[in-house]
Image (cartoon, rainbow, N blue to C red; front, side, top):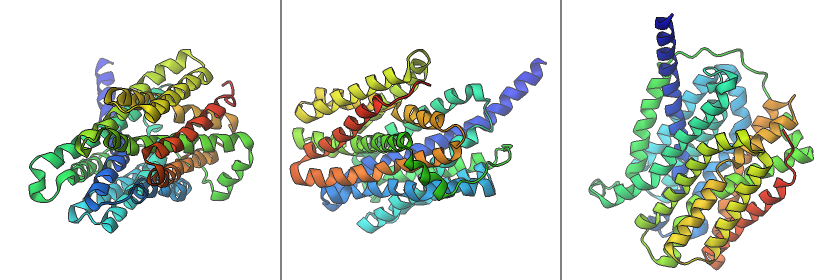
Length: 392
């Protein structure tokens, strides 16, 4: 009996470790904020030109979320995840061959396509390994692992920019190569891991998803997801620019602001899983939004480093659980159409395209305070959404 338990535990670990490594690879998409700042510096781009990179990455969620659901039904979740990581690895190797504007656009496009496919297929894959009563905590841990990759990106980029790697004409782009190698490792481990999948769900079409936007509450949730992702991408892109603009620090030092954001987002994600067990979603959501609003106010007025870090941290912690609350609200509201709602909410990640573009033009016009104003509009919407949250 004891031997059987040990064997089962070992078998489970051999399956879950490669899957968790996939969550780490999922976090590679967050390097776009750090990378776009370095590309802007290297090529002398305006804010609107540089912000096209994160916008391009998240544009593909609009295109690929629903087709990915159809693909999973044909080839399985594991194979779909493998395809997404292969595309991700290719995107990360491309900058090794140049750093022109066109090369980086191609790299970020493929990174966005790979991540859109991964975001849609990896979470369902976990359901094949975990019982329903442990699924939420496992997915939360997956988000924690994902956040580690996000946190490491600005550190690795700054290290590459200031050490031996300029000799090999890589500099900060060593970040791409390191993450590409990790992607190859993830492909190898997942491909070698046997995972038994249940019969695929019925496919959902684009029409079935979009028609749900005619329901007022689902539309509110969709826009809420857009605001969450827009604030997330916007903060990790703009935070270093604010510090450079107001304090005159070089990018290698200012880039640590992105790390601050991801540290607090990681802590918030981890703690949120426990807090939501004892506190209503509406109250916790309201507290989270107020924290983000306070953080935005600090970014508007502060010109010293410590308060700016505090504001960025407040936004990171406040924004860490917005997605999970909005997503669960949408699913509970339409229990008979979960597949369609899931696809629609993933499409809402398109907010990562809309916000950076608007922020770039605002920053070109009036400085980084304009970018903060755009994000604050998103926070204001989430404050409005708080009053619409239903009791689950």
